[in-house]
Image 1 (cartoon, rainbow, N blue to C red):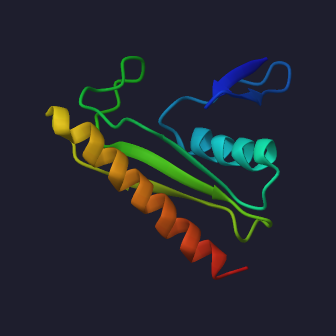
Image 2 (image 1 turned 180 degrees about the horizontal axis):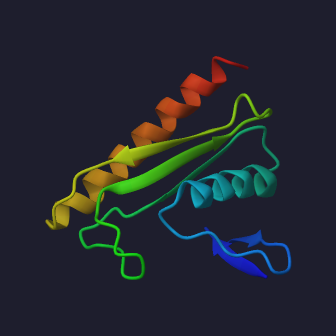
Length: 115
């Protein structure tokens, strides 16, 4: 079965459970999907709760997230937990999105040094 990932399908083996939004596994799956679907050497994925509200299914609070980079090797692939802002103000969402983006770029820079 498939699950939309930015318009790209995430393909799961028959009987394999889908990863949950807001998890390290989901961020890594999105990074690999980006890499595969774009035909690139590197892919970036993010899965989190930017806010301003908690996640409706998991109850995870706003500001919790994971960013992942899928590089050309296992050594250049990684996941980072991100702790953003955890209040319920409308501006929190855009601030957390910026924090997640910055963390993803920092992780990519770190992993590219290993390449």
